[in-house]
Length: 103
Image (cartoon, helix red, strand yellow):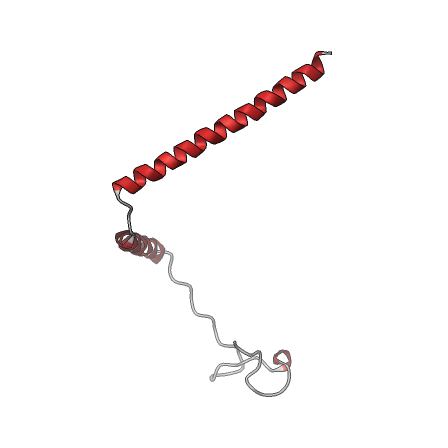
């Protein structure tokens, strides 16, 4: 973890600003890259990202056909059971409210 001071005692807020070796002015910030390079950088970043994705996809342990079918059947079964359960409760509540508001 970086410290606020250079090892000397006292607060970093009370230290004078660093100056460039050539004079009393603070060191200049580095210039921003020209805007013409931005599309090239974006293209290179995109190509690198897609290359990394392809490499990761080759490392994935894909399930075999039988496992995919079995998992899909379990999902469909759970969906059907949940749908029937919710339909039953919906029907019960619909009947109860129908009886309450009939009067």
